[in-house]
Structure formats: C-alpha cells, structure tokens
Image 1: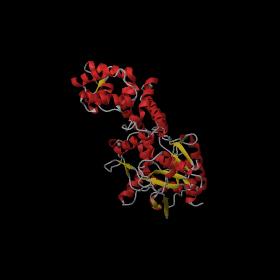
Image 2: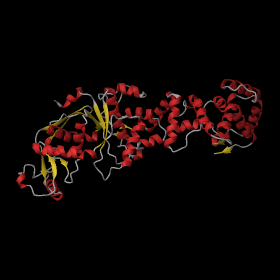
Image 3: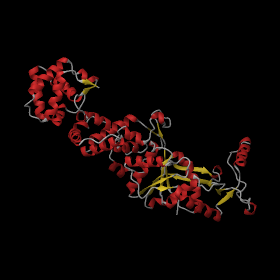
Length: 479
C-alpha cells in the first residue's frame, strides 16, 4: 500500500503530549487541529501520554493535560494511553527488527561515539556517527556488554515526505543516521515508541508542529523497515509572539488553565486557536460546529501564526454576547469553582440570570461579567470606586433623597421606572443622565453597569430604595 493510502481509511488522529508541565497554547492548538479533523471526518481522536521519560513525567502534569483538554471541550475517544505501559511492546518490535536484519546491536560506548564525532568535525566531515557494529558478525559481539538497538537505515537514496502543509520535502539518506530504537537500559527512544504506538493505534494522520518535520523522515524509515503504512503528515508552523519571535512566557505563552483563570470562554479559545494557522475565507468569528464542518488540511498555512491577546479578548466578547444566558451562568459557576470561591446563593444567582441580557453586551471575560453583575452580589453599604464616588457629590445625594421619597409608589418595571425617573428629572430641570448616573453609582458603586432601570427592577423596591436612601443620607463607603 502506498504511503498516502491512509487517505481512504477511517480517519484516526492523536494528540501525544509529554506530561512534563502544563498544557501550553501550542499543544492546545495541536490538540484542537487533530480533534477538529477527526470530528470533521467522522473519525476518532485519540490521546496518548508520552511518559517514558520517568524522571520528568509527573502525575500532576498528566492531570493538568486532562484538565486543560476538558476545559477546552476536546473530548477524546476511548481511554488515554500511557506510552510507558507499552514498553514491552516497543521491545518486542525492536527484537522483531533484529530478527529481520533491519536493526542491529551497537556496543559503541558514549566515549567512542564522541571521539568519532570529534574526529569527523576536525576533518570537515558531518559528525554523523557510523557504527562499526552495523555489519559486524554476531560472533564478534562482546559477551554481556551493554548495547543499544539501532535501525539499519539506508545509506544512499532519498526519503521523501509528502506533507499536507509543507508540500514535498526531501531528505538525503546520507544525512539520516542509524537512530537508536532501544537504549541499553531497555527503554525505547521517542522515535521508535511513537511509530509503534501510532501503528498499533491505527493513526492515519499525524498533525503536529513543524519542529517535528525531520522526525517525520526518521520515523518514515522505521515504518518502511517494518513494512507498515506511513501515516499522512501535516506539520504546522509554530506560534510566534506579536513581535515575530517564537512564542515564549514573555509573550504570555501560558498554560490553558491560565486563560481559564483569566475568564475566557472555552468557545472563544477554540475559535481563536483555530485561526492560528488555519483559515476559512475571511471568517474570524465562528462556532465550534462551523469549525468542525469547515476544517480541512488544505487551508493550513505555512507561515507562523502570531498570538494576539487583544484579538482573543475581542473574540471572547463576541462569544459572550451570543451565548445563551443559562450557558453563561453555567460558565460563571464553573469559573467560581475553578477559583475555589463559594457558589452563588440561589437568590443572587437568580438576579444575575435576570440581568444577563444587559450584562453580556459589555463584558469580554467572565470576571468582567461578574463585575457587571456586582450589584447583585454586594451587600449594603455599597462601596463606590473612584468613578462612582465622583458621581455622588452633595448635590447628587440631595437629589437622590428627593427621588427616594417620591419612588415609594412607582410601578416596579424597567419601563415604568424609566418613565418615572424621566418625569422626576424633568421636574428637577435635569437631563435623564444627570439623574440616572448618580442612581447607578448609588446602586452599584460604579459609573458603568447594565441598564440602571433593569438593575432597579431586578433588585426590587425594598433593596433599591434602601440603597438610594442610604446613599442620600451620607457619604457612600469607598472601595
């Protein structure tokens, strides 16, 4: 079967992170692209934890990866696979390769290899190690000496990678060494374990960063040595910062949990990450369902994508505006839980839900949404920030006292309250804003909020009048 025959097989993609830290943005995008392609094709998206490096792999990091994927909404099919649990399978394949003569035992020591490379560099040759054990008679093998198992790679010709993103990429075989498959301690190398695992998991498409492009050539040699089908490769450019340099912590290259803690919606993160290296015409804002329907490998770009925090924030605001009120309330519940804050009391939660249509028009993150709904979460006395306190000068407080005394019998609906305040403002010889803004500050402690009349209706007459009267009687508390 030719290398690209997997095009017609049921699509199987995988995400295979090493559990050595948090799920960073680059890894999250790789997972997203694999997930989108599998879901688009009606295939399977698998998760493999590459934890053979026991010194650096931790259960905490593994759980962080699970948590990050779950938050992003990237569900995987079946159980997550531990690469370490498959070490005996990797060794079995290596022994099979020895028996077939496509691999060999190498007894060269680290000192001998370094000496070889130093001499090669001194003589102007590439420091590619050529093992003296490649064609050695097994009868000459030293007894009980430690050894590695190396691939017997072709020394001439070319290895061609047909990549869905990078196009045709050719490597001269003389530049590819006899890579180690199994170390002397019996631990498989990354190159060998990945090939065996991808084959056994029936992976048809490998979508990953283009820093693995050379690895694709080396892994192709292992596939061919074993007579296995080579998956379809798609090596995507890495993410860069706004300055064009490789994305790093100074650019905000944080783990996905940091973006969760900043209050971005998972939908917005999926939307934004999908646009980092993939496009569908000029569409910037789209739903996950649209992304699944549209996603393909043909529109993955070759140029590195640039992470733009302001664009992410803008997209998050768009997703908040179109989200269902109940869904946003659920996101707020999950956000508070992730911050280890107590759940909202039922009455406050009910008030927030009623206020949601007005709040979500301005907020771009969940903390901003909570700030918009602060009026429903605070107790008296209402604390005012600097902008709110500025609206509550003595004249305004006197005006609030007069308004409060007249509002005892107002019709308590948003429209009725607005009409009532308009009439009051006219009687005072003031514009509506000159009354509504101090009312807003008295009720919320802020100069910006959802509609002040919606707030009054939601708070109810008792709480509204109590806050207004308390503010009218004296200086409001300052935050």
